[in-house]
Amino acid sequence: MSGNIFLFARNELNAARPALDSTSGPVETSEEASLVDRVCAGDEQAFGEFYKLFAPMVHGIILARVAYTESQDIAQEVFLSAYKNIHTLRDRGAVGAWLAMIARNQVAEYYRRAKPPEKWTEELTDEFSRHDAPKTEANEILAAIRVLSDTYKETLIMRLVEGMTGPEIAARTGLTPESVRVNLYRGMKLLREKLGIVSGGNSKEKR
Amino acid sequence: MNEDYLWDKTGHDPEIEKFENALSGFRYREASPPALPARPASQASVVPFIAKPVPVFFRPKFFRYAMAAAACLAFLILSFGIWTQFSIRDEEDTFAGHNADKPIAGSPPEKLFEENAKKDDALQAAAIEKRESEKPNFVPRNTALSIAHNTKARHDRRPKAPVKLAAVKLTKEEVYAYDQLKLALSITGSKLKLIRDKVESPVEKVPVRKDGR
Image 1 (cartoon, rainbow over the protein chains, first blue to last red):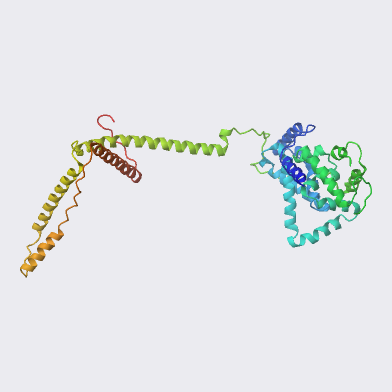
Image 2 (cartoon, each protein chain N blue to C red):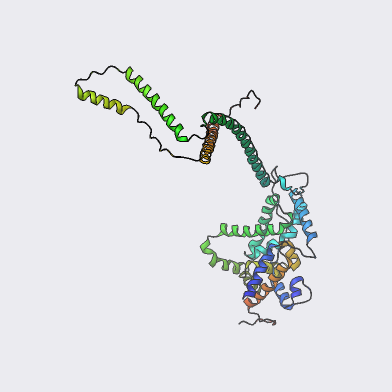
């Protein structure tokens, strides 16, 4: 128990440190910084590159909280908001974490505008199931991921849905590679427990 | 579970691959970026923005604190200068005044007090007599009673003589300490008075003395 708490605390502390991955750390951070500078200068092509680079991360964060059919529109709003406010960003190398924060805020704003609070719990599940209905197994997996904590579900969705690797997730979000590795490992473990998958087995066995 | 595959897709893991295949339908669809709004003139810049680190001294917060500290220091120096100027003049004035009133070495202080009291009595008596002489002549209706009453009233109107201190013998050291205390109190009092005047009145030009001070 104390070991788990220690791991959790270490995980949270590591999440606050900037990414220092050996494969794509400092070089990519400076590229991102120069990209942000060009966007600030009004370069539309640079903004296109910026969008392409961060869209999977933003979409993954949004998909962890919102139905798939709404996620694309919210992602567009996130980038519009980022473009309007990018000149206020002080640390050019932390643009990923800044974008992630905007994405989470946009999701909160979406729920504030769309539905009153008392209807969220009963209609949220219906909305997920209705919009994602054709893919049954996928719905089940996605629903199981969404009930995990924010740290795990965002990382898992970026890995399993968006197809990003661990180093890419660390570079885009600004988390340390160790933190991302822990999130992925523990997230997968919890996901398998939620889905009732026995460890080491390939088939689903409901407990 | 193959952790390497989970981390950077090295090797194979059928379970994770199954999840990936199932969830690929929810993947982000590459779309064109949103149409950019027109930027206000304040944000638009032709020259590319290059973020330069601001030196510590010019950061607004540090600059504010530095200016406040400099203002406090200047105020303290100015106050000290003005205080020094006035204290020198006060010491000279007080010293001159104190020397005039300084009792003869060895004479006890209560003698001075008694002499002063006698002087006060004499002055008061002279003032009362003058007042009495200026008044219209009082013609009593009755004789003895009114005279006695008037006399008594006149005496009552006279201010009472101050209480004389009991004679206390002091040593030379005590007398010296007493004088020093009086001197210190007078200096402090004059300085306080000056500060009060300075605070209450506008700043006036300090006159230059003939001796150059």
